[in-house]
Image (cartoon, rainbow, N blue to C red; front, side, top):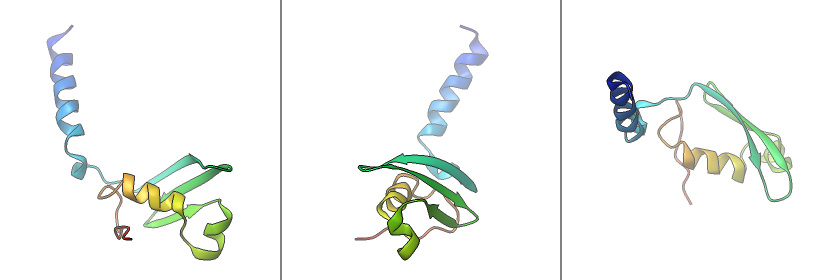
Length: 82
């Protein structure tokens, strides 16, 4: 293996241990829920989900899960608390 590629792999592993370096400005994902798949998006500090609960509450378990997974990586986020 090329030595420069080895260094890139080592650097990637180092970066992966520092999630605070990453800030998402936007993203889209499909969340496989227990009953159905849901389209989730995040843009400019705003989450959206295609599930029924979100339409009436502006939050849902799918978004809360994403907030926990991406904690510290999305801009303008408040942490999820119980």
